[in-house]
Length: 114
Length: 114
Image 1 (cartoon, rainbow over the protein chains, first blue to last red):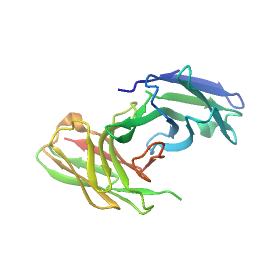
Image 2 (tube, rainbow over the protein chains, first blue to last red):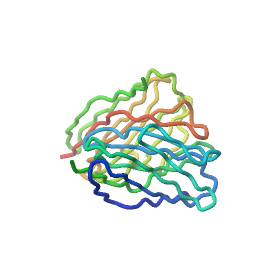
Image 3 (cartoon, each protein chain N blue to C red):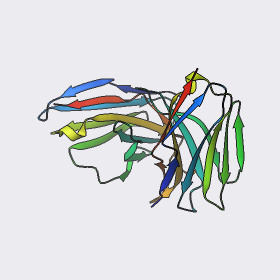
């Protein structure tokens, strides 16, 4: 089955700095890579996703890049703000037993200090 | 806006009790999911329903019994749970269970087993 590794487990930055979270996946058949933000006590919220036919996608201060050859993808947050503080999960999706399922990384706790 | 609603938000039950968790979505999605999330861990897939049919059961103990009465509703019936079953139970939905479908999560039910 799919295996997703995520690094770092904790990331502390100053407000205004950039933050980068990296994930690798094992199954070359995976074709969809979402990122979720989960604030304490709240639901995982889909913030950006990328499909395997695209190398990069941006949405305001966040961007995701995908390298299919190396089987890794990254989340980039620019001009970080305290409200960006949360746990971020990457995931990879492939068709398991005929249905698409998500395999999550272990998460990165991002702390943005004012 | 996408919305998945779950009730109750919190549930405390004894090991001999029977209770049910409910999930509802009105986005016309035809795939619905149950996940279990322990503290500081990623969501862990339990069940996948596609077009109201149970499609994936990730070897979940029989004390958890899912039900999909119609395309908008998903239930999780609980009976004879163990203390280790205490967790956040998340419901999610997607357009269908095909490749590259975004999954949207509800706020979850925080379950405590006494």
